Amino acid sequence: MPESQQGLPSGEVSVQTPEGDAGWAECLRDLKRSLEGGSVFVLGNRRRYPVSDPTKSRGDVSREACEEAFEELSRAIDLELLAQAADAQAAKRAPGEQGCGRDHGCVRPSGHDGACVNRQCEELPEASPSSGPPSPERPAPAAERERLARLVRRVAASISVAPGMQAVLAHDLPPALWQPTFAICIGRGEVRVLTLAYVGEPVAGDRPSCKRAPFMLKVVTDDLAAAPAAAAAAGARYAVEPA
Image 1 (cartoon, helix red, strand yellow):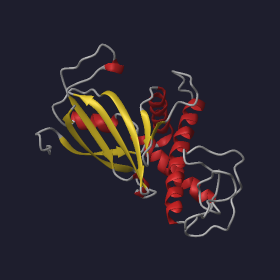
Image 2 (image 1 turned 90 degrees about the vertical axis):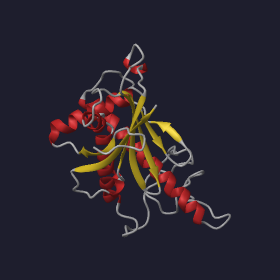
Image 3 (image 1 turned 180 degrees about the vertical axis):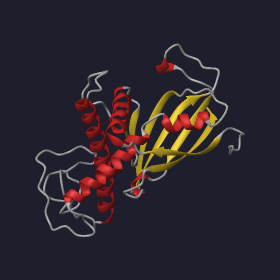
Image 4 (image 1 turned 60 degrees about the vertical axis):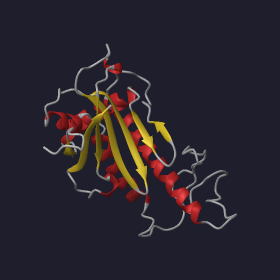
């Protein structure tokens, strides 16, 4: 297996998209637990914020609770993408030129679809209806929703310890990932999931939430926004480094 410059393990793994109702149900339960544990974050343009469990009900992995968790993840990704698109549009505007003009403080461009948002990625009240006909540059809302749903499904599949377990099992490392944390990295139209977890021995700490080890495993997916619609898996690269 390939090794990093320090002689520590590195390589590539595959992140499989769950198949069938049972596979997706298990994926959403994992997502719900990760949100409960406060281990999922969005990293955007000079900002970082957690994706929190919207139900505030620990241990509830019912279908309804898991679907709410998925919707919360979708909302967080959508708002960050919108905010970055607005920043890009603002940078192109002439000095003094305003944003959409439909709601005070909205930073999205004129003629946008969906809710207005401010620079803190917060929805402004009284979302305005979409305006303007669809075009190749601005797809119809239904197409936008489907594209976002595909992206969020790929992100949800990557918020899992499975890729990291593939990595440690491919090398002579104990089959455990301690304090796994997931960062959804969004920038320049790209979306990747970074997983960080302690691996190796000796392990210190008396509870799973505080256990640590001498090494850190880093797993980074390929750009999930660029993956083909029919892709059954995404690639990811990993490396083990001193903690």
